[in-house]
Image 1 (cartoon, rainbow, N blue to C red):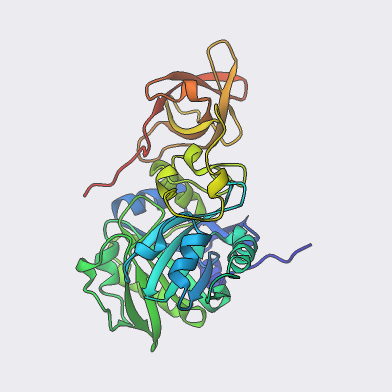
Image 2 (tube, rainbow, N blue to C red):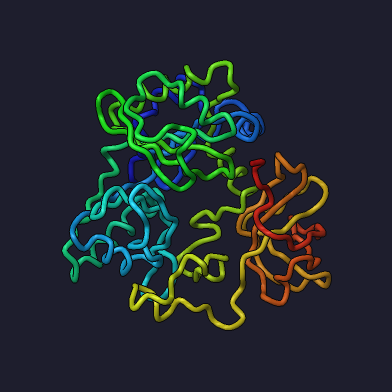
Length: 368
């Protein structure tokens, strides 16, 4: 039996009374106080998440950009230094190995952040694709911790954190899906304006040994500003409201990007990339939609989406009673004939048919 893994912030979570759950082989805080309170704090002020279970890889060398154009589905060579891009790592059969975010640190230097549960698969795929390129791929996950601060007050709070110095771009000028350099405890700190909640916010990549001190400093800066530590339960309802896919739910090795609404991420015009010849879904393949229902009973992952006569139309991948909207929402793969916005369907919630309507994603957009 594999021993569970903990992030460098384990002691901080235990001191705050967190409840833990297994996530991709890691013991992660699922909540500290209340799922609802943590969710609402992110929508209204700010929440701080430990996401140090995520995996990090560096890609360096004169062929780094060309290599990533081949290894990933997007055109990473067109990304400017200082920017970030969402992309997909595909298998030869066009299925999704993982969804990743790529940061261009320099002309020949990139950082990739992938999902914790796919660390081994991503490392193996990246390394197996280097043979035609002068490039070095390194798994640096254990050297870093990753802390996310999300919510409308995130920028103001982080701008006042004691110990963050040498910020290369003023906080208010940092753009979405871009990064700035800084230092913390005399070591490099990467500030990425990215996140997984649908709110404004930042993800801070810090040396693992300095994670506890940075966590404490951010909490101190957030006192009186509504900042709370938040766990995976709130992160899940936040990302669901924002229509953001989760690997193992909306994304998998059996899913083609276009089925999950991610066809735009794939640059099919590229001369070659892994998965190019198989990236088109089969005719009639189910597609991802949003579903909105009334009442309080939510459909959950694995529940069927059915027609009035009980015929199965698809399956829910993620579902919850939306804390922000006050009604049940879900994402589901359904037959193309039932995917048009406004289509009436039913959720089979433990034998009860709950009326629902196909709706556009995302369910929630933050106020600008």
